[in-house]
Length: 139
Image 1 (cartoon, rainbow, N blue to C red):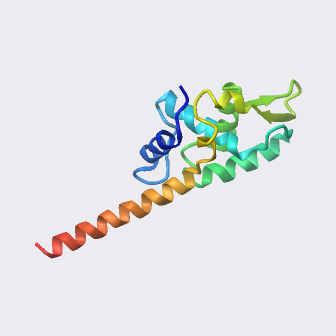
Image 2 (image 1 turned 180 degrees about the horizontal axis):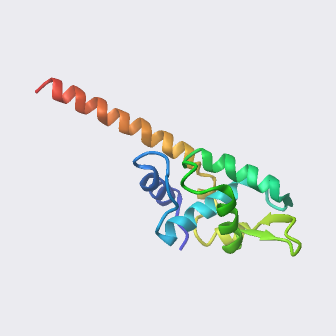
Image 3 (image 1 turned 60 degrees about the horizontal axis):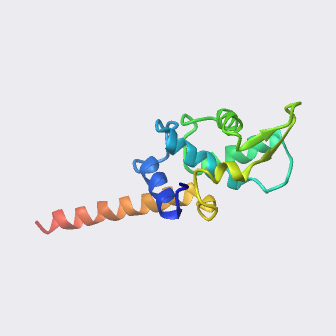
């Protein structure tokens, strides 16, 4: 059953709890969520050149992952392997298959921005630090 918005956010929060993601998720289910989310970078029905795919993925990954986590080329290959990106036989053009990603996350969850989740997690972490600092001053 596909994960809903809250479940997808929980997965992303877990992946970025300590800061930007610095490695591909070890759990296949977590990786599948990221791959399905990556489909939101692309427009249904549009055909993309490889350079466009690379640029979109590089920008998307930079919002929540370190360069060491994964490069956009590896991520593109994973998307092709999972058939979320369909490559033409010549390898020059790609299109996205939203139906494949729908097996992992709901359509509404597809629009969740991992970068926004990371930023929210940072703000919450800072709030907890401030609360601990205030609490320790009063002890």
